[in-house]
Length: 459
Image (tube, rainbow, N blue to C red; front, side):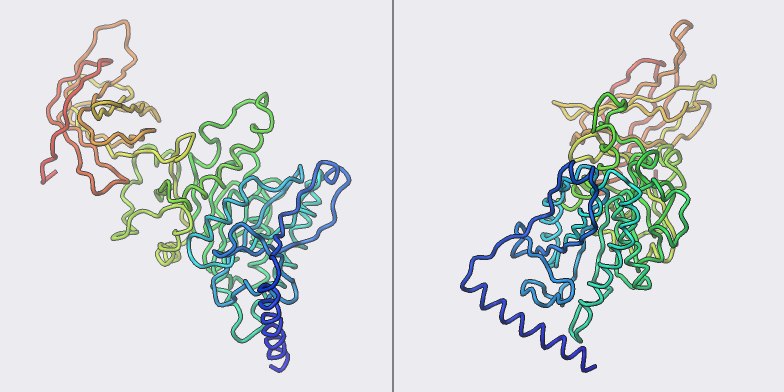
C-alpha cells in the first residue's frame, strides 16, 4: 500500500513539474521510428516506444516513460485508453495509415491514444524473428499497463482497448492473456496467418484474451489467419480476396499487401463515419450471398451489428450468442459500402427454367446494375425465390427498375416467365419504403422495365 501511495506521489510531483516546464518551453513531438532496408537486412533489436496522442495533441506524439506513465501531463489515467499496435514491417517504414488512425480515434471520444512503436523488432527480413519478438513486446506492454494501474486512481483494465494489425493482433492477444483476459476489448485487424495457422489458443489471439474481442478478416488465403478468433468475426467479401486488389504478381508490392491492408482501411472508413458496413451473422459467405441471413433475428430490436469502433453496442448480445460469424460485401473504393436489397420473387411459368437475374435501378439521371449469379436459380410454377441484390452505387429515389432473367438459351425458342410479384426491401436504409410490382410477363433474356409501386400492407 505504501509503495502504491509513493508511486502516486511521485507521479503527481512529476505532473506538476511537467506542467511548469510546458508553460515556458515549446513542446517537441516524438515520431514513429523510421527505418530503412539496411536495418531490415542487418536485423534490429527489439525496442518498444509508446507514443501518446489525445484530442489536444492529435498530431504531436509524446513518448511515455515505461516505468512512470504519470510523468507525462497529457496522460489522464481516468480516461479510456486505446493502444494501436502495428504488425510486421519488412521495409522498416512507418505504416501509411498510422497518423490517420490516431486522429480518427481521438475524434471518437476523449481517449488516450497510445501508439505501440515496436518497429525495432518488427523490421527484419527474417519474419520468424519478428514473430518471436511479439512475445517480448507483449511482456513490455503488459508491464506498462500494470504501471498505469499502480495508483489508486489509476487506469482500469476494462477501459483499455487494444487495436492490433496483422502480427500486432496476436501481440495484443498475448497482452490480454498476460492480464488474465481482463482487458476491456481487443480488435484484431486481419490477424497474421503465417506461423499461426496451427497455433493453439495460447499461441494466438482468441476470445479469452479480453472481455470482448472483435476480428476483421480480409486476406485469409494468404497473409491473414483463417477461422474464427473473436466473439464476433467479420469477413469482408468472404474474408479473402478483396475487390480492386491485384490478382497477379506482376502488380508488384500491391499484390502482396492490398488484401491484407484492406482491413485497416475498412476500419478507418468506419471511424470516419463515411461508410457504415453492416455485418450479417451467417454460417458462410455463400449462404449470405444466397440471401439466407438477412433478418438478424437474434439482435432485434437492434439492427444487425456494424463493423468498427461502435460494435461494442452489440457486446451483450454477442457474448450471449457465443462466437459469431458476420459477412458483408464491399466495393473496390471508398466509401466501400454497397447498396443492399432483399429481393423476393414469385414466379409462375409452365416449364422449369434455370438462370441468373440482372436488376438495374434508375433515378432519372443515373443507374446502377447488379448480376445475381452466385448460383443458377430455379424458376418454376409458383416458386418463391429470395435473393440478395447488392449495387455498387446507391441511386435514390428509384424511379424505374428493370429485370432480366438470363437463361443461357441463345439458339432455341424464347420462353416466357410470369412474375407474379417482385419486392425489393432496402436492407441498410430501413427508413426507405419497400418497392413492389405485380403480375409481369417476362421473355427470357430480355429486359423488362417498369415503375415500382408501393407494396401491399399484408405482404
